[in-house]
Image (cartoon, rainbow, N blue to C red; front, side):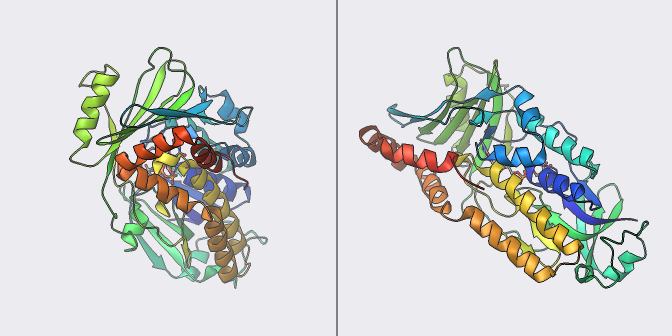
Length: 385
Ligand SMILES: Cc1cc2nc3c(=O)[nH]c(=O)nc-3n(C[C@H](O)[C@H](O)[C@H](O)COP(=O)(O)OP(=O)(O)OC[C@H]3O[C@@H](n4cnc5c(N)ncnc54)[C@H](O)[C@@H]3O)c2cc1C
């Protein structure tokens, strides 16, 4: 059985960022990922400008810029009755861009692997259980005086991780980075029931002529649609509705974009649920596994990358025998700080999309007073770490 300092379940932006930072800090790092990358993912594919600082920390900002992408110059909000408001986005190197998740996530997972993480793809976690940490110490193959101390405070428990292929792993710290339907949270009985079930569909379709470099957020009677060009030829199209309305939304998209009924769509649900506590003992949650934000705001990847970085910092301290409780308290505080002053925007966005007619009224009001939407958009796309 292989033993690791940290096992990260999920190789999306949260898991890859955490894994890369842990491996760079010299920790024995395992990533277990269900899919084989590159893979697509239900997402609007938009990178909030605040991601750039984190991508610099990871040493991949230039490589992301080198991927096929679109630089986005504005957001157009369209009400149900067709009235619209256009808000400009920041320009320059650190502008908002859209890039396919197949490319972006693969680059991040490769970064984690290159930094020294052991990445197991096509491997699904099926069970996790606590075990006694001292048993783990006897398996450790190489002594590292800087990291391994017999009485270290981080040794109090460890995790046995079982996977679908029958392989098992042991890790001193377990990270749930496995997205909104986190298996780790479910296996620990921590996964909250979704507050109100909605469903999202996503596809890459041919880019309509003259679409430009804008993001469109369009309210529709049945929900909403997000649209953004991801390169010179493709448009990312997202539809968000409820189970009874989603097929009408799909029909709208087929008419509006002249796409055929056999267009393949990716799907995900739920879109909202209560958060899972970020840290308890040697179990931490990051990214969507910890907290799901409203897709409308396009901030999820930022939170995933940042929480991965914060978790890596806490884990490194714990493995290096700093006081575990204070490292965890600091991590919890930093996570709360990351969301502070922003959740009201998220609630506002959620309200607007749950009741698209109210969202549309908001767009109409913003036609008279554009400062409202300019302010909200600026708050979402400009942020300090
Ligand atoms: C419709 C929609 C549009 C969105 N648009 C945007 C946007 O434009 N910009 C933005 O920033 N955010 C957007 N988001 C949010 C964004 O997609 C997420 O916040 C982001 O993907 C979270 O990253 P993560 O690493 O936490 O989780 P994920 O990206 O979900 O990665 C989790 C990984 O865990 C793996 N996994 C799951 N279970 C297991 C298991 N049992 N064993 C092993 N591996 C497992 C999965 O295969 C997956 O690769 C959108 C979301 C939706 C639903």
